[in-house]
Length: 316
Image 1 (cartoon, rainbow, N blue to C red):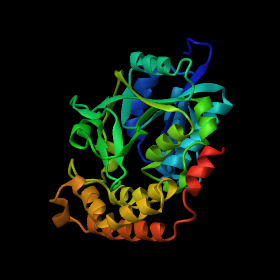
Image 2 (image 1 turned 180 degrees about the vertical axis):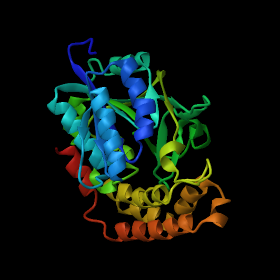
Image 3 (image 1 turned 90 degrees about the horizontal axis):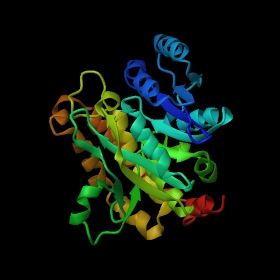
Image 4 (image 1 turned 135 degrees about the vertical axis):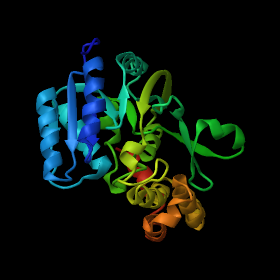
């Protein structure tokens, strides 16, 4: 429960992951004791929806049931809106495959005390204890994303910091000021976009290193039958496409041209996150590569007036 006079909420977007909600969200809520828990269930099957309904009823969660798949950004916007309607002043965005303890939530909340425009993330580890996220940058030279550990190797390269949407803490004030997630991304890169808009509006990004969350990324990024390393076709496609969407939102014309030139190399880097063996087993990575690179180029070629997205973000 709240200790500072303001209610706080956990918001989770679900897509066919009721088993993960039961394993992770139920445990997090039982320990951290939020005032509000909102689950947005993007539809998959009727059986899955019934399982989520049963779970939400048992755990006393607020359930939002869109009739169509709203994507991650759209789902987050619906979930946060429901939490704000119920009086939340602080919000924890959490993936279905992530969990966080009460002490770590307290540290995230303390980081925004008196600093309502701070966007905070914990240090995130895998179930085995290795670092999964401790801050990240997006390179302005080619749009590749890298963890903070790579900064020593890229000292002369200009970059922008961003925080992952797998686990984010923010205030209602920050959310209202930014206008929420950009739904055009649909899936992936919304958090990079959101982080950039926070900075442009005078906010700060902060990794709270003594707050720790555990994230089993593969639980939501893999399709049935895939190896531990390979990702879904959806993961590949939207990571390739949305890199260019981000560029058209925030870079000048020269920057967009530079990123467009590097579309093939960037797409290859995304595909190879799943290893080379997958390329011999399935056409899905190849299909995602071709579709993603094609649509990325189309987005660049259809770019509106220079920095229109930045102007819109900074005049809200």
